[in-house]
Amino acid sequence: MSSTWMRLYRAERIKGRHTAANRLWLLMPVLTLALAYGISQSNGTNSAYNWWYTLMMQGMITLFCCLSGGRDKKRKNRTVLSLPVKMEAVWDAKLLTGVGTVAVANLLFTAGILLGGCWLIPRIWIPQVMELTVGQAAGAAAVMIAASLWQVPFCFWMNQKWGLLPTLLINIVMTMAGVVLAVTKLWLVLPWAILPRLMVSVVGILPNGLPAMPESMTYSQALTDPANLLPGLLVSLLWFGLLWAASRRWYGRKGAQTV
Image 1 (cartoon, one colour):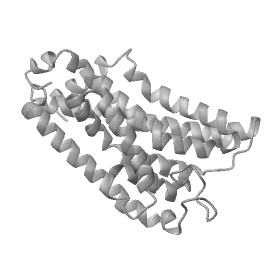
Image 2 (cartoon, one colour; image 1 turned 180 degrees about the horizontal axis):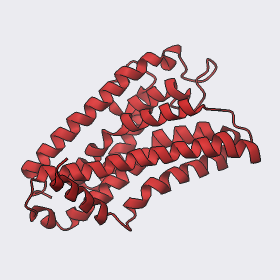
Image 3 (spheres, one colour; image 1 turned 90 degrees about the horizontal axis):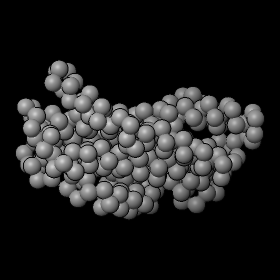
Image 4 (cartoon, one colour; image 1 turned 90 degrees about the vertical axis):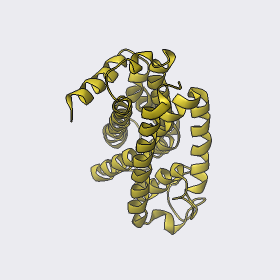
């Protein structure tokens, strides 16, 4: 890891201090947990997971990437273009701040599930329908991180091209489409459908929020098959690598100059 890259990464972190984007990793998981347990009560853990990976996390990633990327964009990237470094390295530093935010937010969310939903809330307030082991929660965190990283380069690139509102609208629409396709044979075709499909195998929650049981709407035995995990994760990571490579090439060649 070069000293230049480290300086660029630290610069991105410093630029984000005391901004709304830098608080999203804390705000969004806490808000999700508070709403889920406050509204759903005994089904709070089910709702928390479902709301997180089908809505709140996607919103967090979109807002973070757009708000972070928008700082230089507002100045037409003059500060970035004046740096004596390759623009690809600047892009890498930006994307890695997003990767770190996704990882930290999911770890915080998982800690809240384990400490709050699996231990504290059942003891002082109301038992939960869903009970997870530490291993299940850790596996869910790993899957949620790995299967959502591709959205970081996608959202950064979309924001550079078209801005926050189109990026947010596209992510919302495609997330809803992903929830629908997740229970079909086409789930690997749309990257937004992969995470909802994989979470059925990991925590037993259908994309519609119902428990993965025969009497639940849209349930099928194929949805709970652990064999879904390997191809789903591989395809998600492939999207991540392709989008990272394509977006850094675009930013290095003309992205920063055309903002």
